[in-house]
Image 1 (cartoon, rainbow, N blue to C red):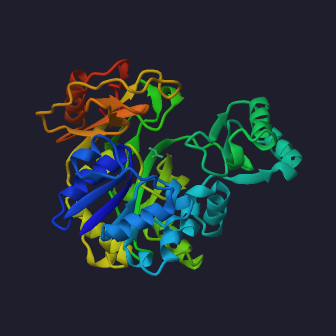
Image 2 (image 1 turned 90 degrees about the vertical axis):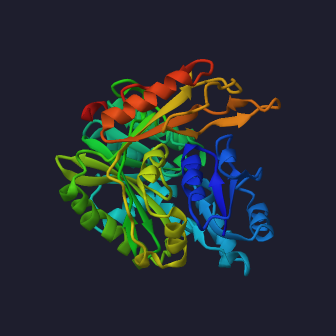
Length: 425
Ligand code: GLY
């Protein structure tokens, strides 16, 4: 089978690495990919948002399975484009339609969905430019902190936690009056703050049946001890010690089952991943957000713990036969440490040569923001550069192994957190 994987981050390198191991995978293409995915398959320099070119590539290369890593092509309707074409609609496709991707594409939609299907989440109201005065009054009487969320996709930047009413009102007005996040903040969700510890839960569904993948916890802040600015993710661990059977059963019965049911009720034929951001508040799970994709860097610890053939599972999800599959998960711990370019998540350099990538350990070196220069050298090409994943008997040994390799890999101004998983060690 020829497989096309869309995306270019550490998540996609982890997918490519796992797919390449499948006996079903005869040829693997990654669109556009990075310097790491080029070691697993063939990178294809086509912009995934150019739907016509993606379609033509699939036909020309007899693609038998298409997997979409990031949310943007899904929210913009890549699957709908395929479904509207007689030939393309026959290609098994992992990723929801635009109607399904709205779980991530609109915070307002997903909050209303949760309310309708009694899925536990924080109280909220949504406001637009027309209701801005009502919104200001609502914020004035709201408990602190106040969470403001731009409704649409805002490159991971659209969520603000405001510690005072003044700050919340200023930001709220900037979002609605000045379009601080462009069209994404044409609607703003004002939400109660949930205090607890976060967990990332991943579900693969064919629209009726589902498999719960290993859970993970990511570390979003740039600084040690969870300090400083938010990033795309500085590391992740799996399993998560507090996500025991009792807690996961609550998530399944109160959140996963009603979510799959609700999507069906809404006539959304959802085939793909659902990433549920959970807040654990005194051992009770609440939904922070839904995403229509896998997490990054969580994928870098989730997939290495899966023993099942990934291509089989994904093909089953795409063709509505997931009930026939069994999911086998390793008991090993996994941890990933993300090496980033100095300055990230603010301004940082690109194009710095990366050395020390020769790896004679068991650590998985997943490339995130990398490419090759004209001399064939691997260079940095993004804020998050390399994710180092280790598997081991315990969290401590995983982190130790990843950090040993992080010391050997060099690029200008490299930075990483050495305390991933610190609360559980
Ligand atoms: N690690 C969080 C995300 O992928 O959105």
